[in-house]
Every structure is written in C-alpha cells, then in structure tokens.
Length: 425
Image (tube, rainbow, N blue to C red):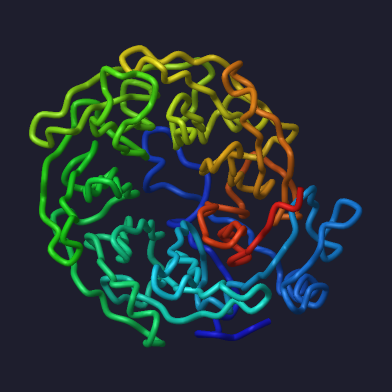
C-alpha cells in the first residue's frame, strides 16, 4: 500500500456522506455504509502489490471479477489521503502530454499522475474550500482551458478554480487560484468547453442551471439561471452538431431532471443565457430518480440512468436509450438491463463504447453499435466491489473518465480509491 500523500486510518463513512436517497432529498441525504475491513483490504493489497493485474479466467488479482478489462494501477484511499472518494475527471497536459486523474473526496481534490503504467503518483491536493475537522460532502470536478473547476455540497463551498499547469513543477498542498462565490453549494458541474460556460446544478441559488462564464478561468462571472423545471441533478451541455439541423450551432443542455413533480429528461437551449428556451421535457415509465446521462459522440442518442429504479422498481441495472434526432421531441427507444442488480451512477461515451460506473458491480463497458435500435451490448467489466452486487449504496464506483491520452480509464471507488483500467479486447 503506497502512502503518497497522507495516511488515513480506518475508513468510517458518516451518515451525511453515503446511502440510500429519497427522490425528494437525494442530493443531501445518505445513509451510512460498511466499507471493507482492514483484513479484507490488506488481503487485496497483498494479492496485487504493484496495482497491476491481468484479467485471467474471469478474475484479476484473485479478487475482482472481470471480463476484457485489466487493472493497470490502483491507489487505495490511504494513498490518496482521503477517507472517502467520489467523483473524478481527468486532464492531459498539452505541453508534456502527461495524464492526470483528478479525484474528489471528503477532504478535497487529489491530483494523480497516471502517465506511467503501474506507477501512479499523487502530486498533491487542493483542500476543501472551508477547513473543518469534520468530514464533509463530496466534490465534483470538470476541466476547461487547463483549469480544474471544483464544486461541493459543503456549505459554503462555491466553486474553486485551480490552474492545472502548476502540476508540472509544484507538489504538495495547493491553494485555489480563484474562487466563485455566486452560489454556496452545488451538487455537480458541467462545462461546455467550446464556449467556456459552466453549468452548476443543484445550487443553493438556482436549483436548475446556474450559468457561469469561465472563458477567463480565474475571473468567473455569473451569466444566468434556468429554474423553470425545478431541481436538475445533472446535465451535459454542448454546442450542438447532431442530426437536428434546426439547432445546429446552438448551445444545448440535456438534463437529468428530478423535480418535485416527477422525473424527466429535459432539453433546453441556453444560447441566450438570459432567456433560455425549453425544447422538450420527457417523463418515462418505472422511474425512481432521474440521475445522469451522456450523448453518444454523434449526438444522435442520449444514454440515461435513473439512480433509484433498481432499488424502488426492482429492475436490473438499467440504461435508457433516447433518440435525439429531433431535439423538440426526443423518443425513448429502448432500455438495456444488464445481468446485475447494482444501482447505476455515471455513464460516459467514447467512440462506440459507453463506460458505466455502477455502484456495487463496478465499471461496465457497453458497445453502442445497435443503439439506433435502442440496444446496447455489454462487452466487458471490472467489478471493483467484490463484496456483492446489491441494489444499495454501500460502496463501489462513483464515476469514471475514459478520455485520457493513454488508452486507459480512471475509475473512482468510494471505499477503495482510484483504479486505472484498460479494455483489452
């Protein structure tokens, strides 16, 4: 076990951090979880001391069930200096071409150089904005113009801005380069890197889309608020280049909308930040809590996850496929249920693959070759929570990042730290 920043003792996650949310209070309500014991973690560490393990005969390191996905590296929470890990993003330095994983957790945001396979190295940490002796909520991170933007449920956290080029020469504990105080807390953050606008969701000031101009990263400024649909849990905002030519070049946000009147996928034109335009808002059957989704690269389809349908409706892990060829009238064309009962969390697409972080069943890799027919196909997985596949929030993977220069995927595990994985087939 590599102690690379700070050593954290027994991992005990408080009730304010993890657990089973209700649709009305998901963004702030979590139950306690039971992380792996010291004996379990020690056994795992000893079975793969270098963090590298091929997927052989259905397992890696005699611990993690897998198929067509191998482990390139692994850092435990102790290695990261965190007591709990959650969201992650990534950055490739345009000058040095080194890859960095940006891992959020209770204590702050950790920067990890993953450029050398098997030699992941913690470079430093940006601590939470408000120092406190108590463990506080998660962080969510996005990157624009070589700067990391970090939000948190912690009040008042606002948005930290950090110049990532500092990682070339600096090590240790960092201070933010700028801070945006236009909201106190936020659940998550999206950035349209084409336009330089950030969209914070679930903020204390605008429950929908709190829009921030970050075109000058260290001078963020308020740009607008879209609140007509109530609480938005997550969003992807893009400059549209898909098949609906009526909207070509417009700035479009597709939202996972868990509002007081139900669960929706909504589409909003935010080109005019002062006067956003609603294009569509679609409900769907067997809903629980509209959580997160992502366009396919051609923007013809949107893959969407509902975080509570497995728990409340008894579904297997479900991903819904939305046909987005008409942004004014998207259609739900199919649902893919894999063979586990785990709750799904975050999904991202790259080329013809979709990478899904499903809490207790780990990283799942889906092929999108038949997405036009409303179908997905599972082609690989790495179960980094070997304890079970329960429809629960007891541990496992929160998120992943498949866009590094190197052909690897970073995967954050709430109870086991950072995994660096690679699809082998």
